[in-house]
Length: 160
Image (tube, rainbow, N blue to C red; front, side):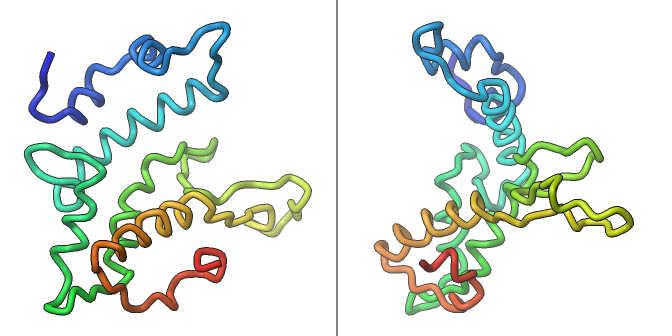
Protein backbone atom coordinates (compact mmCIF):
# COMPACT_ATOMS: atom_id res chain seq x y z
CA UNK A 1 0.00 0.00 0.00
CA UNK A 2 1.52 3.34 -1.10
CA UNK A 3 1.08 6.14 1.40
CA UNK A 4 1.61 9.87 0.62
CA UNK A 5 3.47 10.27 3.91
CA UNK A 6 5.43 7.18 4.87
CA UNK A 7 6.14 8.33 8.42
CA UNK A 8 2.39 8.60 9.00
CA UNK A 9 2.14 4.95 7.98
CA UNK A 10 4.94 4.11 10.43
CA UNK A 11 3.16 5.92 13.27
CA UNK A 12 -0.18 4.30 12.64
CA UNK A 13 0.47 0.91 11.07
CA UNK A 14 3.97 -0.46 11.68
CA UNK A 15 3.81 -3.59 13.79
CA UNK A 16 6.68 -5.45 15.41
CA UNK A 17 6.09 -8.33 12.99
CA UNK A 18 6.62 -5.94 10.02
CA UNK A 19 9.86 -4.76 11.60
CA UNK A 20 11.04 -8.34 12.13
CA UNK A 21 10.19 -9.25 8.55
CA UNK A 22 11.83 -6.13 7.09
CA UNK A 23 15.09 -6.70 8.96
CA UNK A 24 14.94 -10.47 8.28
CA UNK A 25 15.22 -11.24 11.98
CA UNK A 26 15.10 -14.92 12.87
CA UNK A 27 16.56 -17.44 15.29
CA UNK A 28 19.73 -17.47 13.18
CA UNK A 29 19.74 -13.73 12.46
CA UNK A 30 18.97 -12.08 15.80
CA UNK A 31 18.86 -8.37 16.60
CA UNK A 32 19.91 -7.23 20.05
CA UNK A 33 17.42 -4.79 21.56
CA UNK A 34 14.74 -5.56 18.99
CA UNK A 35 11.82 -4.06 20.93
CA UNK A 36 13.73 -0.91 21.87
CA UNK A 37 14.83 -0.33 18.28
CA UNK A 38 11.28 -0.86 17.03
CA UNK A 39 9.98 1.66 19.57
CA UNK A 40 12.59 4.24 18.46
CA UNK A 41 11.47 3.86 14.82
CA UNK A 42 7.84 4.39 15.88
CA UNK A 43 8.80 7.47 17.89
CA UNK A 44 10.89 8.77 14.96
CA UNK A 45 7.82 8.56 12.73
CA UNK A 46 5.86 10.62 15.26
CA UNK A 47 8.66 13.19 15.61
CA UNK A 48 8.70 13.65 11.84
CA UNK A 49 4.91 14.05 11.79
CA UNK A 50 5.11 16.68 14.55
CA UNK A 51 7.96 18.73 12.99
CA UNK A 52 6.92 19.77 9.50
CA UNK A 53 9.38 22.68 9.38
CA UNK A 54 12.34 20.32 9.87
CA UNK A 55 11.25 17.10 8.18
CA UNK A 56 9.13 18.42 5.31
CA UNK A 57 5.46 18.83 4.55
CA UNK A 58 3.89 16.44 2.08
CA UNK A 59 6.55 13.76 2.37
CA UNK A 60 8.33 13.85 5.70
CA UNK A 61 11.70 12.19 5.92
CA UNK A 62 14.94 12.64 7.89
CA UNK A 63 16.77 13.87 4.78
CA UNK A 64 14.62 17.01 4.75
CA UNK A 65 16.77 18.26 7.62
CA UNK A 66 19.17 19.39 4.86
CA UNK A 67 16.43 21.62 3.44
CA UNK A 68 15.82 22.97 6.94
CA UNK A 69 19.48 23.97 7.26
CA UNK A 70 19.67 25.31 3.69
CA UNK A 71 16.66 27.56 4.32
CA UNK A 72 18.79 29.57 6.76
CA UNK A 73 22.03 29.99 4.76
CA UNK A 74 23.13 33.43 3.63
CA UNK A 75 24.43 34.34 0.14
CA UNK A 76 27.81 32.78 0.95
CA UNK A 77 26.08 29.58 2.14
CA UNK A 78 26.99 30.33 5.78
CA UNK A 79 24.74 29.24 8.60
CA UNK A 80 25.15 28.89 12.36
CA UNK A 81 25.68 25.39 13.71
CA UNK A 82 22.73 26.25 15.95
CA UNK A 83 20.40 25.67 12.99
CA UNK A 84 21.62 22.08 12.61
CA UNK A 85 21.50 21.60 16.38
CA UNK A 86 17.86 22.79 16.40
CA UNK A 87 17.01 19.97 13.99
CA UNK A 88 18.87 17.43 16.11
CA UNK A 89 17.15 18.60 19.29
CA UNK A 90 13.80 17.99 17.60
CA UNK A 91 14.71 14.29 17.75
CA UNK A 92 14.77 14.30 21.58
CA UNK A 93 11.39 12.51 21.86
CA UNK A 94 12.81 9.39 20.17
CA UNK A 95 14.72 8.63 23.36
CA UNK A 96 12.86 6.41 25.83
CA UNK A 97 11.28 7.81 28.96
CA UNK A 98 12.88 6.78 32.21
CA UNK A 99 10.86 5.44 35.13
CA UNK A 100 10.32 9.02 36.29
CA UNK A 101 8.56 9.77 32.99
CA UNK A 102 11.35 12.19 32.04
CA UNK A 103 13.26 11.91 28.78
CA UNK A 104 16.87 12.77 29.40
CA UNK A 105 18.13 12.08 25.89
CA UNK A 106 21.50 10.42 26.05
CA UNK A 107 22.05 11.19 29.72
CA UNK A 108 22.01 8.01 31.76
CA UNK A 109 22.20 6.96 35.40
CA UNK A 110 25.16 5.16 36.92
CA UNK A 111 24.24 3.66 40.27
CA UNK A 112 27.82 3.79 41.59
CA UNK A 113 27.69 7.59 41.47
CA UNK A 114 24.46 7.93 43.43
CA UNK A 115 24.75 10.17 46.51
CA UNK A 116 21.76 10.16 48.87
CA UNK A 117 20.30 13.65 49.17
CA UNK A 118 22.08 14.96 46.04
CA UNK A 119 19.67 14.75 43.10
CA UNK A 120 21.37 14.14 39.76
CA UNK A 121 24.67 12.96 41.23
CA UNK A 122 24.26 9.68 39.37
CA UNK A 123 23.64 11.28 35.95
CA UNK A 124 26.27 11.04 33.23
CA UNK A 125 25.82 13.12 30.06
CA UNK A 126 27.21 10.89 27.33
CA UNK A 127 25.95 13.04 24.42
CA UNK A 128 27.22 10.19 22.31
CA UNK A 129 24.14 9.80 20.15
CA UNK A 130 23.29 13.42 19.48
CA UNK A 131 26.91 14.43 18.91
CA UNK A 132 27.52 11.48 16.62
CA UNK A 133 24.47 12.48 14.63
CA UNK A 134 25.57 16.12 14.53
CA UNK A 135 28.99 15.34 13.12
CA UNK A 136 27.52 12.71 10.77
CA UNK A 137 25.35 15.45 9.25
CA UNK A 138 27.88 18.29 9.59
CA UNK A 139 30.56 16.77 7.35
CA UNK A 140 28.36 15.86 4.34
CA UNK A 141 26.62 19.23 4.55
CA UNK A 142 30.02 20.90 4.40
CA UNK A 143 30.79 18.84 1.28
CA UNK A 144 27.68 20.40 -0.26
CA UNK A 145 29.25 23.83 0.29
CA UNK A 146 27.53 24.82 3.52
CA UNK A 147 29.86 26.82 5.74
CA UNK A 148 28.92 26.40 9.38
CA UNK A 149 29.65 29.25 11.76
CA UNK A 150 29.74 29.09 15.57
CA UNK A 151 31.37 25.63 15.49
CA UNK A 152 33.02 26.46 18.81
CA UNK A 153 29.61 25.62 20.31
CA UNK A 154 30.34 21.96 19.62
CA UNK A 155 32.05 20.11 22.44
CA UNK A 156 35.63 18.90 21.93
CA UNK A 157 34.28 15.34 21.73
CA UNK A 158 32.37 16.23 18.58
CA UNK A 159 35.28 17.89 16.85
CA UNK A 160 37.83 15.20 17.74
